[in-house]
Image: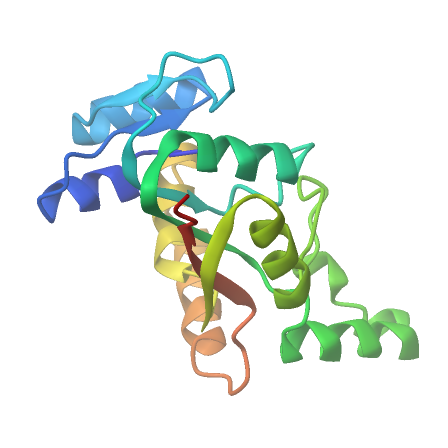
Length: 199
């Protein structure tokens, strides 16, 4: 799910031999046009022709969208070299801010902000406990978790690239994101690093 190629481009700039894997033809065209990066219009599958020796695989805001997260994680393990790392980011269902929003929604419709945290395109939400169990079941070890706020700069960049957001709407988005970044306890995402177990 390399999307518009932002991560692939950053990895290339840092000296990695990087490639993206993205099922959307539109996103593949956009990433090649914007960054001239190596992107394959495909999905990780058991029967694909993609390399089986990646050192690092990343899933930025991908796992919550797929119909079978366990199959995706198993396919990631299959495409990693022994000792390779999977790095993923996804909403943290156990985050304090999410708990507050869920509780507020039970008090009044006026306080129901769940639409700002839960999206129709998201099929799954994970706590760190559930994520650890999933990764270990799929052959990963040394699972480490880090907290993060939504990457607002990425959201702004995506809005501009895909939808051409500009003017007053862009100023409003920047103002809202500026405020959200300064709220205490607003980490709502988990970043997970896990190593493929060696045999």
